[in-house]
Image 1 (spheres, helix red, strand yellow):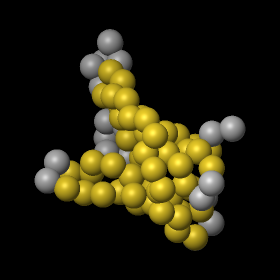
Image 2 (cartoon, rainbow, N blue to C red):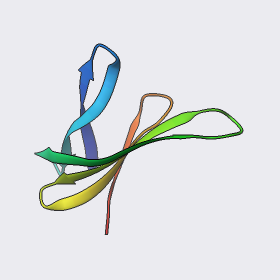
Image 3 (cartoon, rainbow, N blue to C red):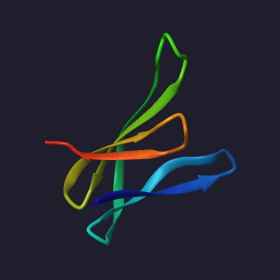
Image 4 (cartoon, rainbow, N blue to C red):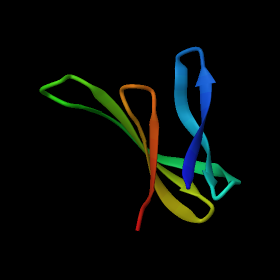
Length: 74
């Protein structure tokens, strides 16, 4: 199970703070990359983060409906 804990500032859910893997929480050590991608047909925006956490790289995506997805990069 992968889950994302986020930092909520004055703009709402702004960036990931930690990843929960099998009920263990790991703080994100560094955000290496951030990009906002927009679908040219639907105009929906996704924010993509590449983060270093627990010695591994993770791709974290904020979806337009304020849900988050997390994948381990290989």
